[in-house]
Image (cartoon, one colour):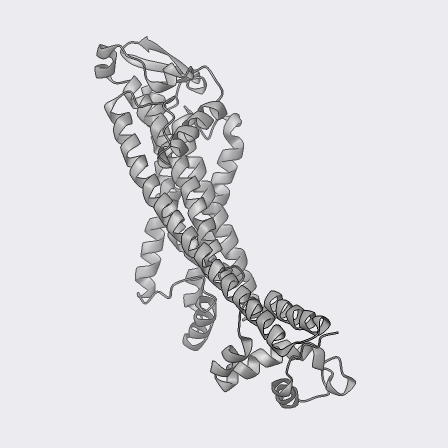
Length: 394
């Protein structure tokens, strides 16, 4: 079980990293990298990362399918141990259904559709035409990997909730969701401007899109096709788009970047709704976190005030009163309001014995008579149940 937990933790970390890479790289390339091609040496690092992510997800799926090759008793044992780590959901479907479903999913998300596209002219590296944009959309099948995001977040949450306060963990999760949503909104707003730039309706109006007003690109009309050439770097264009996304999602609205067309306006409206939903969830969670922390601190301060009144009532000497307060402060800093004795009493005998042995085993094994290979496990467990932590004031 211990090595399964370590493998599960590594699997969760790699799954979250791979899913985050897909959530970031694919929309960014569609929006800001015209003419992306696996044949171009400039994009070799991205291509290598894409294939590494695909190989990881396929390998992980094959490992899950290999669990079905065990004998029935072993399969139940391995799958129960694996899913008890909180890293997966036990699938009750038949092995054939699970295999075909996984094969269809991974085949759809892994096939590099950009390889079947015709070669695009070299100017796609600098200008963005309709043909370049159509080829960029061939990467969209990789966005199917985003379906792994809820499962990856749940598995990471289940592993971290034992090591971090749930309220703070939720705040970090909401911050991550806001970052990813802002990234997608920035890419969508830039793509919306690109679509509006190529629209014949906009050309009839003869007005400028927000990237042209912001000095991000210039356009050239060649045979009814609009070629867009970036005047600034991709990172600068992305920074301006991401800045607009965050300003819009938190409903600040400085007004320096505004939608100029219908598609940009609808993108802005959707981003505001998404941003308000995430912001409300973050504010509500932060309020609960602060109220919970204040409730514990208020109880502790009330107890200290009661101790001081007790010391005055009993007319305790100042040195004794200080020792009493120091002891209470020490217990508070050590336990943070957790009544360990009460929790231990509520546990069944087997779990109470296991918890006690974990706390006391290392100390007991230091004794020569209780060293490994000498003392019986039953003796160690019996002694562990009798041990009790005591705090002595100096």
